[in-house]
Image (cartoon, rainbow, N blue to C red; front, side, top):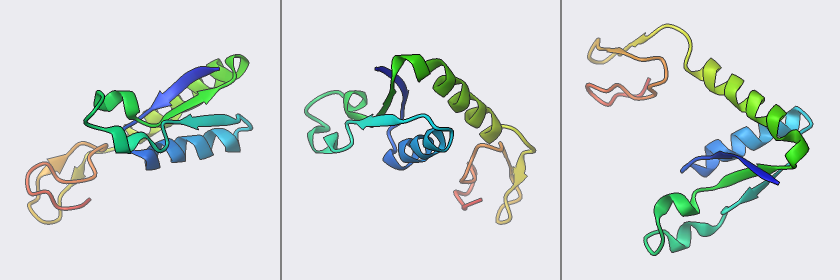
Length: 100
């Protein structure tokens, strides 16, 4: 087994897991319930992780990379509240904190 993805947000890890499963790559989520020990161990040691079989890891990493590139492409967006320009990957305006 090889770790192919980790994130502090379990919902993001779950979304990536669903995407991999849609591509016929089964994965195992680890540290799913580890948030209770956060503070006692380094926080990144308890982030949720996705693990796949070694023979599928290259394909899984390729799919994850494709999704991450798609998320970060496209035009910047203009905040409706303060008219500030924000990068495409920002979900909240950096100036006034209004939601995209």
